Image (tube, rainbow, N blue to C red):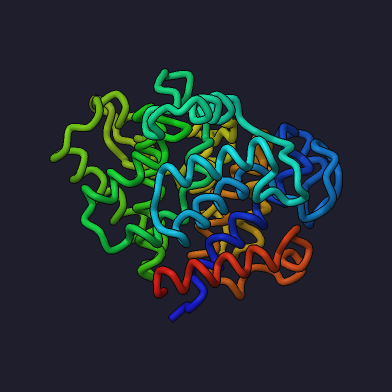
Amino acid sequence: MNSKLIHSALFGIAVGDALGVPVEFRDRKYLKANPVMDMLAYGTHNQPAGTWSDDSSLTFCLAETLVEGYSLKQLSNRFINWYEYGYWTPHGEMFDVGTATSKAIYRLEQGINPVMAGGSDESDNGNGSLMRILPLLFYIKEMKIKDRFRYVSDVSSLTHRHIRSVLGCFIYIEFALQLLKGVDRFEAFLQTKDTVNDFLNNNPICSDNEIKKYCRILMNPIGDYEIKPIYEYTEDKIESSGYVVHSFEAALWCIFKENNFEDTVLRAVNLGSDTDTTAAIAGGLAGLLYGFDAIPQKWIDQLARKDDIYNLCERLKKKLKQ
């Protein structure tokens, strides 16, 4: 039994994130010619090697909140402290933030109810809640599925309230839950598809049109057209933008295209565009799939604040008795 599942997930996210930071916004063509093979320094954000971004910062804010006890108000405060004062940043200063997240934090600062802070327009479906939600898995894993959905919805809604973002987070957590149980990744995919579709069929939380946005993961037919599972598509059919559906599909696709942690996160980075987030999402899943010891030690050693991250993992493990 892997006794470091929390470490696997959080370090997996941070390592993937840090690998992608230097080449964020680089396109796929550029990365085909100049592939990322290791931790790089500077680049897009002019940061030292091993620097992680808002993806990891907000993930750690959630983990810290779970250590103290689940509270949307405290999570909101941590997001504000990160944005305003550099809380849980790699070098004491926030250097990257998504538009939707920035707007939501402004609303939180004005005192809005946390579950109403996130944008709810169709244009608000970036990947900003998907990238940070994985620690919640360890808190809700024993709950009934309806309760798991409620917690995921609330935590996503601090920055991303549209049902498409919530649904993406929910499917992601359900897939991660299967990996946490030690289920083979292909079986995990099928189990997730069946579990989520059954839940959606019995709990009309969104329109069929919204469900179909994830058809390559949930494999719902469109009309008479059967949809292939995400892992059967070729790379040219995989997009890696900051759109929540693209990010989730790209990260999941990488999980199925490689057979170890290192190659999975490197493939995610080299898809281009939103490199840090695709790799952070894939890294969290790959950490659960392959375990903490599968994450290259050289990359862990290069991470900013690696001892603080390890301490956070230990505290969360103790709190949740895992």
